Length: 343
Image 1 (cartoon, rainbow, N blue to C red):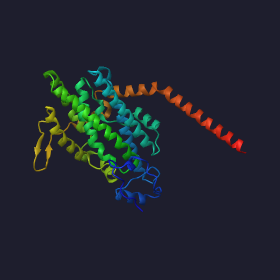
Image 2 (cartoon, helix red, strand yellow):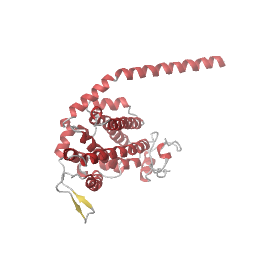
Image 3 (cartoon, rainbow, N blue to C red):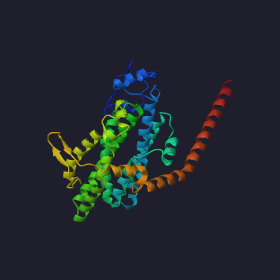
Image 4 (cartoon, rainbow, N blue to C red):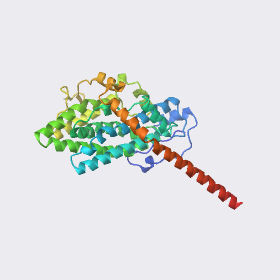
C-alpha cells in the first residue's frame, strides 16, 4: 500500500528525522505507487537503478558545489573590511562545509561512499556548479554571491525540501534555513556599498554586472536542452523545471534590485502584464558550455586547490581510520572478556 504524502518539511520535526515507521518497499510497483501518491522513498526501499543513479549524480554534484563554493569566499576572509565582516564570512564558509557534509552523508545512503564521490570529482568524472568558476576581485563580489548566487540556490533548493527521496529532502531543510541568512548577508553588503561613496556604489554595480547572468545559468540549460530535468520531475526529485525556476528568480530580483538602488544588466528586462512575469534577454549558453568543459576563468585553480586540500588531509583520514580500527578491536576485546566472565 502506498504511503501518504510526507509531512511538510518546513513545519514538521518528523520530516527531519529518519522515517522508520514503515516496512521497506519490496518491489518497483510499490515504488511507482509511492511516487504517484507524492510520498517519500527511504534508503531501504526498492527503487529503479536509474532513480538511484539520478539521485547520486544530483546529490554528489550538490555536495561538491558546497565544498568548492567555499573557495571564492574563503579567499576574502583575511581581507574582509572589518572584524565583524570577517567573523560573519567565516561562519558562512563553515556553513557551506556543513552543507557538503549533510549532502555527502545523504548520498551515502544510496550505496556510494564519500570517498568514491570525491575521487569522481578529482578525476573530472563528476561536476560542481559552474558558478564557482568565476573570480571574486572585490569585496562587493562577496555581496553579489550572497544576494544572487545564494538567492538562486534558495529558489532552486526550497522545493527540494519536498523531494521524493527522504534523506535528501530532510538535509535540505536545514540547508535552506542557513542559505536564507547567507542571502540576507549578501544583500546587506550590497546595500551598504550602494549607499556609500560613489566609488562604493560603482563597485557594487560592477559586481552585480559580473554575477547576474552566471547566477541565472545556475538553474541549468533551457528545458528543451536539459537531459535530466524531465525525468527528475517525473520522479518528484525536482518540482519545477529549469525555466520555471529561472523565471521565478528574475521576478524576485527586480524589486530587490530597486531597493538596492542597483540595475540588473539586461536591457530586455521588462514587465509583461499579459504573462504576469518579466521578459528577459537571452543568456550566453556558449559561455555556460565552455565553463562546464573546464574553460572557465577559475576551473583549473578551483580543482588544483581541491586536490591540494585532499592530499594534505590524507594524514587526517589515515589517523581516523586507525583510531576506528583500534576502537573496534577494543570493543571486541571487551565483549570477549564479558562473555568469558559470564561463562
